[in-house]
Length: 269
Image 1 (spheres, rainbow, N blue to C red):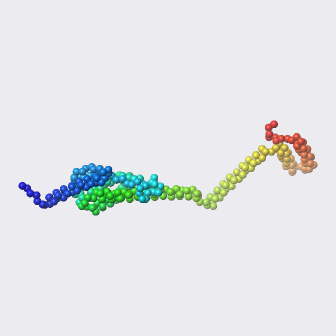
Image 2: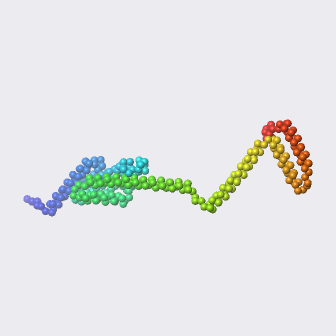
Image 3: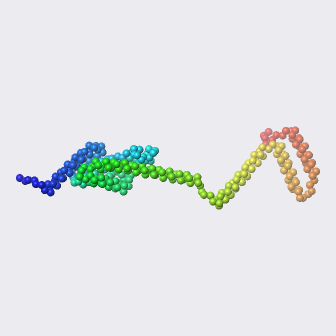
């Protein structure tokens, strides 16, 4: 009858059996702790593999969320912790991978997080360590969401600064030089003169429309007399008695017009 003796093979077998039992018991404990989060892909030793789904807090639940409550803050996210337990676990650390962070964080930031988890695992070699790894990841997720909130806040501040700079630029306008001022003044003076001339024409037209028939008659008679004087100024000697006769004639006509009570010439009969 064969007898079992102590030796390297026997010791290794007992160690392996202990590791298998440890992995089995830890997996059962994790299923009890994370019943809705854990997904076991393989529970057979030595290829125990499982996932734990973890969700971050929403932006409004984080200490450094934006004051407006988070349209601009970081949204919550879900990360999947994938663990593969080597046959020598827990005397070695598990294989650790993170899924679901690629769209929100850089590859460098994700690798940094995995390294931190491996460091935590290394500090707990020789004992079940998955719960400690999960707890550390949850703490890091809080830091990640705060980082995204701060990034969003800086983005909002940069946008606000750009808008304020654009507003200031509109009010400041272009810097005035002597040359640019003289060009502007010339254009302004030309526009002002043109506007004044236009207004004078409009005023004259409005005044013409308001003259009565009597005023128009007197205006035309005066203009005609002035034309005669201008035409004969240097050609002949003026007989002043003619003006007296014209004045007497005009006075007589005005008396008659006053008696007739002439209405405005531009009114309809």
